[in-house]
Image (cartoon, rainbow, N blue to C red; front, side, top):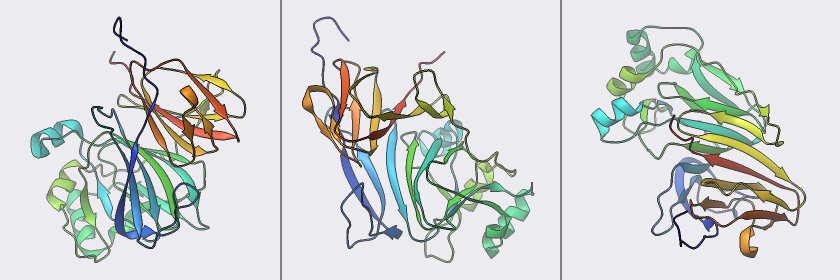
Length: 279
């Protein structure tokens, strides 16, 4: 914090609801249920603030497209954008819910092109059963798809560059040439193991772009005041200066944040996402 600057409390982010054909109307307990099929809820920046990461909730009743994201270099060259590295944390999963990450076995670029056009790509993907509490790291180039019956919290670079390989016959554009240029034609290692740190936090994912920890609180406790995004998954209570929180809210902790303390009125679980300092 600059000398003489006043500390600031965490800033509540605005939830922006996006309707999708594959979305859901049951959004509780994070948001009120709707009549529209909400697929994504983005947390957008407050006025005058820049978000270091993009946090979303995803609600699915149908499969999402088979897609892939570029890295920074490709995205800068072709899209004038950052690339997209992301992670998912599963909040709810209906029986039999699954996601696809990577291919079952290595294939050629031409085989992938043909499979994308014919729909065979679905059977070439490695579909994995998922359960609440699972986490997955999706680096650029990973071919992936999210199945039906899921609620995920997604944390990613601030980018919306997606290349679709296959979309189940929906009338949306595919991006085969760019997708094939960036896709990894190999399997994916699977779920992220969770590491419990000495503080008791669960480390869900860590890379050059973000570090995501899952924290649990039942009693008042201090919170690290370093810049971060805090996303409430369960529970209610107050943060700094009596600021209330509830499930489905996300807060920006800025560099000038005041000392933080959480006061849970009910058992609370949150995700804390930070951007590592460059080495």
